[in-house]
Length: 291
Image (cartoon, rainbow, N blue to C red; front, side, top):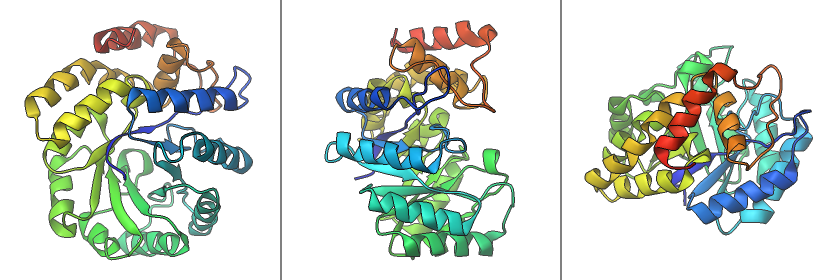
């Protein structure tokens, strides 16, 4: 169910910061039409730190109603509190999602034993498959392969979004956990290499802007067609890079708004993309052929 190009979807907002649910539903339809293989709702790219619990409930309910059965819907439920993560995971399950994505606890920096217990407790509370999420560049917390191997023994923990960009790390996880354990790239810039090395897909920021091309890249890489995968990836490389000229999701929300798919809103403490970066992101979009 969870393979290919899965978009970490942005949360559309008006200029005043209100969630635009109509734009969100239209965006889901667009992704289904463009070939996106799944959606992650209210992840980091969806501004999870500032989207309220009631807004999260509404977004998940609408996503399941709109594309459930067409695309797998995965909820971002991780926090740096185990109790809160359990609560958010249970609520997401009640809304009918197909899986949950749980990030490593940020800021409080638990050790490996604490991480194993945290994820195990959250998985115990889940009625749907759990995907671990390791992104130490943002969390200051690194879930190491031996801990992943222990967690892979839990019946509901089915995989990991590995966002270190280290292909050797992904290979080690695959070696330790076996072919039945799902490894998804969390780094667009290295996802082609990771999938050709055995990962089963990517949870992508770039797919917000170029979903069709990200699907093509993923499909080629998963089929082992390196030439076709490289061809698609070469068109996407500037987007992989330039959608991070400021903190995600600032550039990607500007790009999706530039496509006319969402209004330009973003919530503090994030601010709109600095005008000095507009030409850079626009050039990357042109290189990918999306405008």
